[in-house]
Image 1 (cartoon, one colour):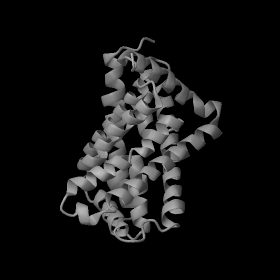
Image 2 (cartoon, one colour):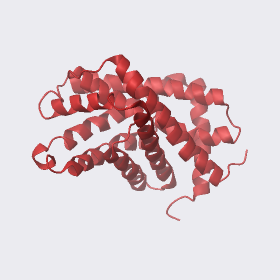
Image 3 (tube, one colour):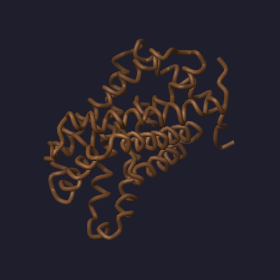
Length: 264
């Protein structure tokens, strides 16, 4: 077969998840670097999505779907880099740690520790990329990028809390389905395409990805958006993160383990 069966994907996810749980205690320096790199890669994808999605205002002004399509088409480079290069992404680990947890290979404490450490490392990577490679270089200073990133940041902290959480569920449902498709693929090209399509969909649909928002909101703040750190955390990152955990851990990890039983 050109792809792995669903059961084979679960078996692969079990091995991957066990390795992810063990990595911090086995080699914390390597683990920490992989978490930071994942944040960098997602921020890179976010930067490209703004540059392409908002770089053709004369074409997209009367065609809002075109802007969403262009942004969506560019953003998946971040997840492709994470998957192909083996970085540690919080939202991906939401699903990937469910097979070992449900198979009795790790505890909820192991899962929580991994999620917290990866989340913090992703934040460091995203913030570092924003400051060094976007703000210092002035990528978002010219129009129409300046107005676009300010508008994006302000919009992300202006939605109702429940709306952000539900959009977070949708975002990581798509992201973790992309990771599942990539694990099913047997070639690099197929892995890339498997990552691209669901992630393009979540961006085009306007869902909320907590790690991506560690790029979008701070970038907008540096460009003058009327957003405080408190608003970023409480009005977006917290509900988006809760939604991401539900979408990834429950709707992908747990559901697919249940459907294609993992034996302990």
